[in-house]
Length: 160
Image (cartoon, rainbow, N blue to C red; front, top):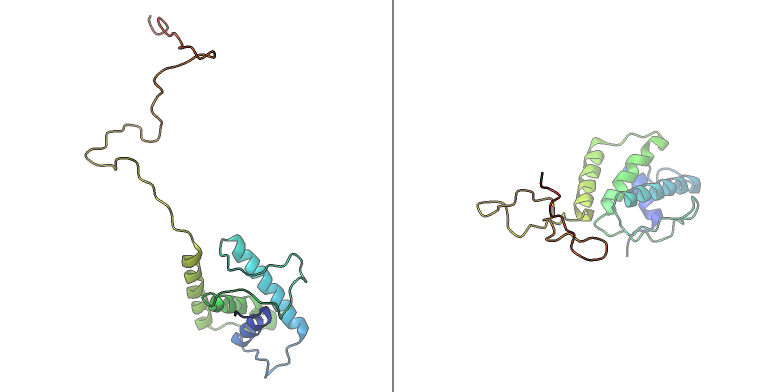
């Protein structure tokens, strides 16, 4: 089971020093942070980081009790990056260590989610046996044909 959206929001708020037991966190504040979470996850999804997060179709389409469907591999990246995004709203500055950890977590997410570049070799690799002059053009066809599938007669065309 993964975190709910509300748990991710509370963890991010705890990261910036607004713990639920110290401050009265209202529902408006948590819903605002959840909308920031939805926006961040939509942005990540557009960049190719697809974590299975249910992105709502409207601004108020999320619920705090809704499961986030995020794997445990990505929890830290989501929490720390959300903390960085919501900290200015609360008049807080994020610790340098939090920024470093968020960057490292994002780098690991990029490495997990980016597809491996597929490389296809030609029939013969470049080297001693490779004799192609124009490797990016197709070889010419053997015969030219006119519209009725008969061979085109070019005799005398190139003679001067």
